[in-house]
Structures are given as C-alpha cells and as structure tokens.
Length: 113
Image (tube, rainbow, N blue to C red; front, side, top):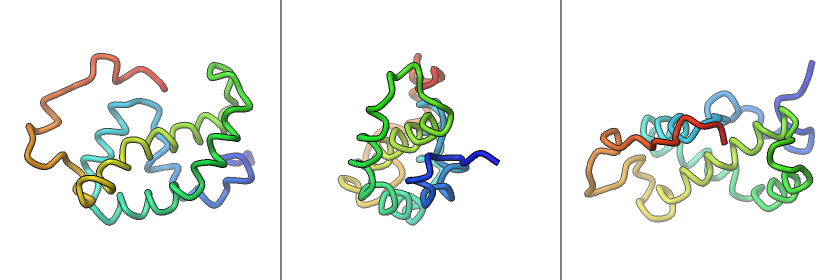
C-alpha cells in the first residue's frame, strides 16, 4: 500500500483526509467550517515542519509532483489558509468584523493548486 505522504512526513498522515484539499475553495470551506481547536491542532502540527516540507517540495517542478508530494503541497496550502486565523484572529475560523466570506467565491478557486 502506498503512503499518503512521503515517508519523512508520515506523522502528518492523520491530517490528510481533512486538510489535503486540492482547491482553494475546498480549503477555504474547510477552514470556515472548522472549530478554533481544529485550526489550532492543524497549525501546531504543520508549522514546525513547514521548512522541511518546502525543502522537500522544492525537489520537483510544480507540474511534476508525485501524488504523495501533491498531498503534502495541499497540506502546506491549507496551512497558508489557516495561519492568519491563528496568528491574527485569535483562532476565529472566520474573518472578524467582516462580510460573510461565503458571499465571495474566488473565480479561480476550483482550480487545483
């Protein structure tokens, strides 16, 4: 059976089902639908590993990622979606004092990566 992620990142495999989402719209909807605790758990598990994740992904041209590395990239992109909500908005899954994000749909948001 193939690993979901490259072997050096197998400790992140429990995050794959929920957070390795291939489109921006899916990542945004996951963030909006998550609790503060879920965001914090994901952030705390991903952030310390981000430098090694980026170093690993840099081995491949963006269009030539193997499936396990593409899932790793999706996790990193989900971290980019979540991080401001931990770092700036005290873990609030939505943007405080703003319009409901569901009103805004990115035109390119269904494109993969």
